[in-house]
Length: 283
Ligand code: NDP
Image 1 (spheres, helix red, strand yellow):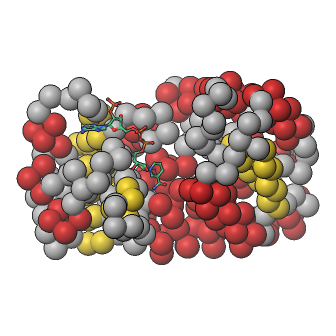
Image 2: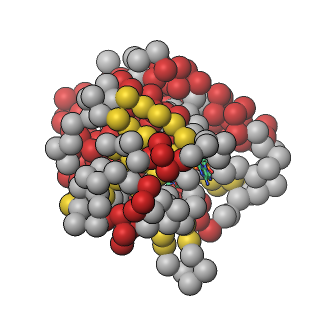
């Protein structure tokens, strides 16, 4: 039976560290980290995420501000809000909650954020820095995954890592991060042929697909580290990951649960990125 990686516990440890470091920053430099979260529309999942981010900020002593625009807000309205936040001294991190309504181009919005305040790590400048092997703000979920692996005492260097999923927010940045940690990385997607042949090679297997329980035990090497990024709501209301936890846990050496694995790390890394942005502004 695999060791179950406790994302809630590791994320709580990180939040504690962030809180202490934020207090030190306030004492030494008089700077309180500030995060602005911008929400367009009222999608229920986004409302929940935004609320959680506000609570997490309050717990570590950050300033947090929420900006809400109606779902029919124009792109230029959102750009105006971002321009204002870019020049606000008290705000060190800007997060625009995705997805945006269809009439707003997310790339235009992300590129409008000052890259120093891009705590989501989605700005082309930050993506480029990661690609160049000189990361600045790194996307929160991939950063959280690497932190989970390292804090569980698992070595990345020299390992064969396979990621299923190539999105800009998880799969691609994670591939670059694992490469920077000297793993040998393969990225799979819908056009991958013989998927299970590749996943079975993995010492570290990451599923970021969005398909409930699609990774089965026969796709996993005995003793592999299995990280499940998926968050899928089943018809009966339960949450399921992309990994069939019950059968894969019998074969893996380490596994993350859903919920309570990668999820809590994403917000912890958002706090860490905001703290880093505030420190930079103090310099
Ligand atoms: P996307 O839908 O953007 O990307 C999914 C990826 O999976 C694509 O690259 C797609 O390939 C690939 N894929 C889909 N089906 C298959 C298949 N049958 N075989 C192989 N590859 C496949 O999703 P995200 O990256 O945004 O999210 C992935 C999952 O992670 C979701 O469940 C999401 O909810 C969750 N998530 C969780 C977070 C957390 O904090 N815990 C944060 C972000 C996401 P192709 O490119 O060819 O279409």
